[in-house]
Length: 374
Image 1 (cartoon, helix red, strand yellow):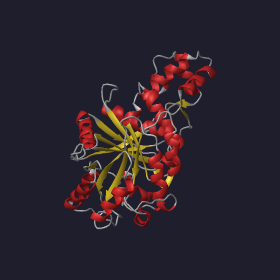
Image 2 (cartoon, one colour):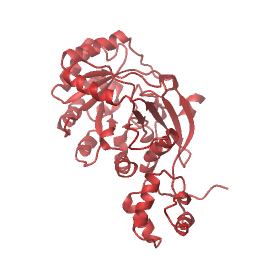
Image 3 (cartoon, one colour):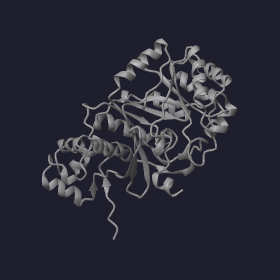
């Protein structure tokens, strides 16, 4: 017999948890105890919340409340230490979450003053880790170089499911904040800005509940222009990265169909108008494909496209996968592309692939079980 559905406490705000407590006849401060237990202490069941009276714990369970954390169904370890987790959700769907020890694999510096500043920050992060989180089951955007696109879109994740990925991986890795310094990137499966409300709600819960600083979070978008403006108006927000991947509309529309809705003129206008904080930079991500977008001419076009922005560029040589027709460029082409941008004064870094051997690198996430069956 199937278990009766429950109401997840994970994903509820402090105000909502306070309301749960008061509706159960408890004083308001029980809401904060619930909030702390769920987000900081990472409990798995209301029964584990020792700060609550036993009667209230039993009442929560009787009323159909559960913590509602997802579960780790399987994990794979790369030769470089990267871990790829298959996270199972309550309805049988699953997503992937990636843990990268010691930052995101490092970025090759560019020698400029801005580059030295960024390298100094990277050195400070030597003993930290990065967790890459999904926002949707699948993705609707059909980018031609991404394995997730082959899934299509299944559904949005709830805020609780987004936070839950971090909770279960933090527990498995025995992360303790603020002792451990972890960066979080919304760069996993899905387009976060097509699940904007749940993504932003998760950000607030991670800041207020889990204790992650917003300055340690980055969200990547393929170019959902209206949401870039929305993000700029938020009082609590991650840093912004834009997945660019082509320097002109013709090529970008071939690689990323979203460009047909919001072209580069609209995207770059939003980027230039985005309100950066002190010492903050936009990140432009540029995946390089052999003989497709990696020529010297493309590099010079890119320089002109982003000229005048306070930004850096992350170059990523394509991470290959089954069903992807594009090819990875030779290292010499990647270095030549980088050199043109550096010589033009653009801080440019080469993102070293992490977890490529276990399909955990950028653009490779495609639910583990489906990959193994294909």
